[in-house]
Image (tube, rainbow, N blue to C red; front, side):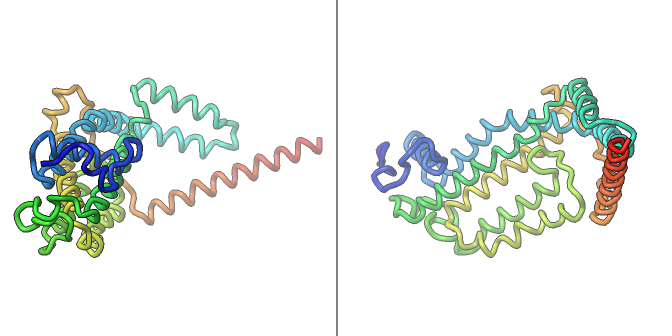
Length: 281
């Protein structure tokens, strides 16, 4: 049996403010409260955190779809500004029109950053579990499951790293955390391959850490599928999924950026010449 404060006695869970320590506190509470193994406690805590964050990502998915619907209008507005900079269209006017468009369609861009909430959570869980793996926590050596019974040691058969890599790759293919992520073909291909390349690193991590990665990536796939489901979105009153605008290839993107940059330089040059001419007069 364990008592609250056991991890603290090992030099772990020293604070409720530092993410790794906070998650160690929470893991201990789940472990003792549920009377489950450490491996199952990691799974339960991961799913619990994911469920708490789910409403935030639902809102983000809704806003992202609203943004996708008005993207052609926003692009047209920006193109109009770039091509007419020398004609007197001010940046302030561009910002005002853009704001009007966002308000009209109820798009609050701050929600688009919501998936970043997974970053501090992921880092906190990673460092928290990694520290526990090196502290001889009682039960960590035999409270795993299946072939990975020792949570302090790497998976001897590489099953968890493979499962995690497959999950993260499938998540990218299926639209990311919100289910509607649009990426350029080259970037998407890189993100699909990256988890398998990372196995050189993840294969060295403790099974406790990899249980977290496998669980959180599995939940992310389920979450992504729900957010792509028309019936689910309809029940929650979310914006309908629209077909994303074709994303240009890397070469096309570079050409577009180069054209826009040349237009801006040309407009700036003309503006400078007009200013200089006005001073002479």
